[in-house]
Image (cartoon, rainbow, N blue to C red; front, side, top):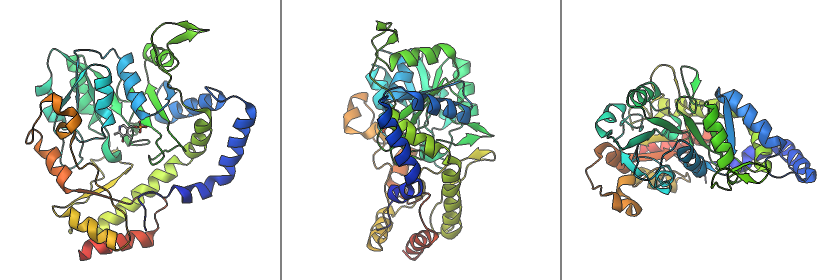
Length: 363
Ligand SMILES: *Cc1c(COP(=O)(O)O)cnc(C)c1O
């Protein structure tokens, strides 16, 4: 079976380094917020071009802590996309705030900035753009709207590590950028992990305090915080993969370009984005009205594919209390019915990619 991700093959290439750093960390006896987390935070901040980068336990916590630190709370409204992973709105609801959805652009699958302003009310506190599938959302427009209305911008960068617009990395546009190192993400740990990129010194200090039980230092607690720290072992492993992230992302882009060449004209292929956009293809997502049939044919031929996401958030049973109904966000609903993500990991061989493209063309 051709898998969506092949983490075992990736491990084989970095095995020596991973094992040696793992042994070193275990032997050191320092497992929480030690020198490897510090090194990873410094290197990631330098890579992303932000003043600070703070390791946390996972991507969901990154969003949650960033919202808390930005002052989002009970009664506030937070504008976001209905076409994303559930965690984006869980974090909003944890804080007692209300997610307010805005429909997507059908080409990028990202929030449509033209539709944001009509949803802004006196209660709106923040916007969470999600760089879905690794394609940057239109940050110049979104940050301009946010500045005009005095709103915070918390970027959901869980799928966009290394993506950029005109050389500026996602995670550096808003007040905070929230990353996930879930194993299958472009930069993945061997377990859970997350990170918040921040430029503002006060916001960084608040997050640093929140992630460690609200400690200001020496068992003096300035806030009711969380236990949400990036694990030292995961940081040691992430340091090794961070050195290769450009290579991993460029391999994804090469595979996307080949798919586009082989599939163009038969299905709707994903765009690389406008001039200056660096899309990192966390997912390679095509559109076709008969995607279930394509999926079946791929399965018969021995290739995995996935539907991200079959149910837009406004139609999720758990969010029924928000009062949305079918028809509210036509583009997100149509995308949910037509999308199909194909294997695009850096380890995917050209032979397997051509086989997948052949199956789709002949179907
Ligand atoms: C993966 C993901 C998250 C959550 O990250 P975890 O590390 O799994 O908590 C949040 N938002 C999006 C868009 C994601 O893809």
